[in-house]
Length: 305
Image 1 (cartoon, rainbow, N blue to C red):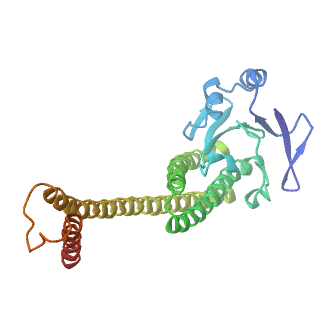
Image 2: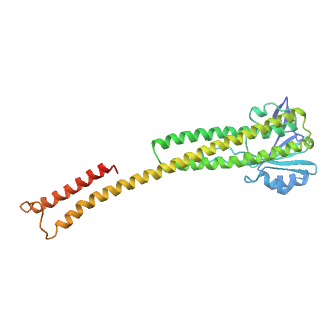
Image 3: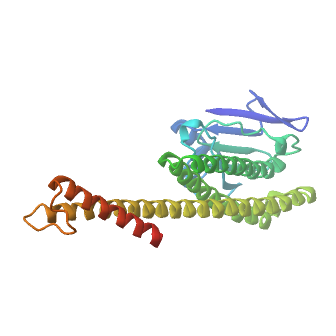
């Protein structure tokens, strides 16, 4: 699907004008891919990479245009089971024209980072800027969800909460890799600033993006370490609870075994000790069994096992 946009009064607005400077291809079909390759000389491999969610961010200088791929958060839905993923976007810069290629329809030009855009060159920078803030927004959400899951685990240790923690940990790994990949891309954009024709103001904005991306990566790293520590602590608690349970079961087993042993011995033809010969046999044996059990429990309590 092809959507066209233009810059009007420093804002990105959709238009039907075929001469629009910004073209957005959403999950292009084979005919649209062929047009991009034939009409704009876009490399087929680079185009395929723009639609591959596992592709790493990179920059390539092609004849007539500059192509780069960057990572952005995939829109999250409740069906994702607390798993946040990163998607890939292709940007093809032709000086006064920009072609964007994404795998799924999304609100690409929303956010305060894109509230004021002066040129197509600035739009290139602000798209990356928006992706960084989008990552940071998702990281805050992940942290809030992790706190909520931790509270639930404190009340009830259920498998579904542990699975939620695993999903959040996996999400942070995806995001760390994506943000780190974007960091390498931003450095390459800075080194090729002359080819883009960035102004001094746009270069300053690019420097701000470098700082924001670094902060985003550190934030993802901190959240990942905290979540990993939390999961290790929960695993230790589960292991300790299992040890306590096994200890209790062993004590119960031994406490039952002692009177069973007494009953087994005196159920044979043996002489009863302690002058118990005149009592009924049943009560003699049960009494000895009860005394042996109580004696074991007193000994266990004394030892504080």
